Image 1 (cartoon, rainbow, N blue to C red):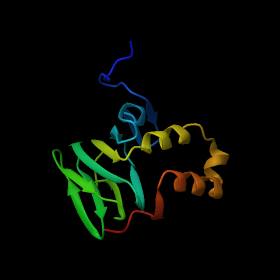
Image 2: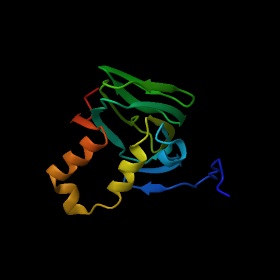
Image 3: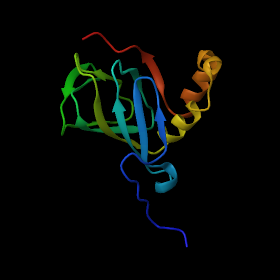
Length: 154
C-alpha cells in the first residue's frame, strides 16, 4: 500500500548542492499534487539571488537563521531568525546574505509548486547549457522566473 503522507528526516529529501547554497526539497510537487513546494535553503558565503519576479507564483520565506537581506518591491529589509516574508506574484525581489554573515537557513514555500522541478532540471545541465542564453531563457519561462537584473545596490 502506498503511504498517504511523507516523512523527511533532517538532511533528507532531494537536494541540490550549489556553490552558494544547498537546497533540500522537503515537500515536492508530487507530494502536493502541484499545490506547493516546501524547501530548506542553506545559504553559503557569497549567496546572492538577483532581482526577479514570478507572474503566477508566490514565495514565502521563513528565516531559521540569518540575517538575510531582502530587496522587495523597492524596499530593503534585513530578515532575522523568526521572520516570515510573503511575496505575491508580480512583485520584484532579490536577496543576499547580510554583510559579514557566513551562512543562513530558511524555509521557502513556492506556490503553486514548480521550483523543485526547476532545480531538478538545472541539476542536469552542464556548463555549456548554462552559457546558452536561449536555453536558460526557455527554462526560466517554463518555470515562471522572470530575471530583471542583479541584486540592487543598497
